[in-house]
Structure formats: structure tokens, C-alpha cells
Image 1 (cartoon, rainbow, N blue to C red):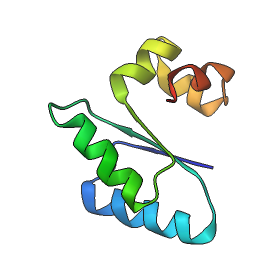
Image 2: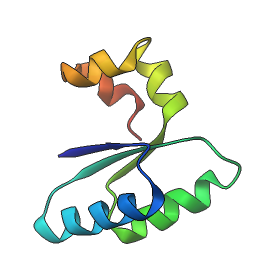
Image 3: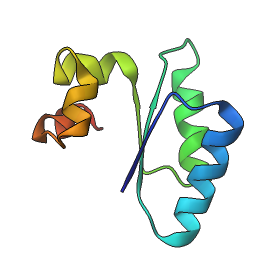
Image 4: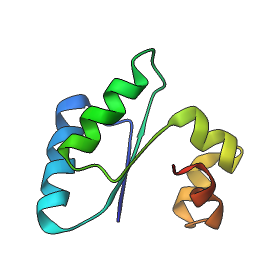
Amino acid sequence: MVVLHLWTKGLLQLVIQLAKAKGIHTVNVVRDRPNMSELEHYLRGLGADVVTTDDKLKAALGEPCDSHLRHHSPKLNDCLL
């Protein structure tokens, strides 16, 4: 599994597609935006397994969320829809 967090749009799309081709699951964390449902649909169409927002991740993990990601906290599952 690969967790992708706030990558540039083009790089995010490329990594999602490469991971899907190799059978690797991705968790994609993006900034919340008005067209979030459209973005989620688009990224899932490219092969993303999970799409969530930075705000949802922070709410589920608490501050600082980066330390939870580094230690593979089970709380990560709380924000993955």
C-alpha cells in the first residue's frame, strides 16, 4: 500500500496508474475542495483505492497527523472511506 499525500496533480495521477498496474493499493490524501466528489470519482477511475481529504485525516488522527503516518497508527483506518 502507498499513501500519497498532497502531491502535484500530474505526479499523483502517474503514481496512481503505476501502482494500479503493479497491483499496489493507494490511499490518496488531497486538499478539500468544492468539487471533491468529482475529484474522488476521477481518481478512483484512474485506479485509486481510497481518496480522503487532509482535514478528514487530521480529524481522525489528531495532531500531528504526520507522526501517526510514520508509525502506521491503526487510527489511520478511521478516516479511510
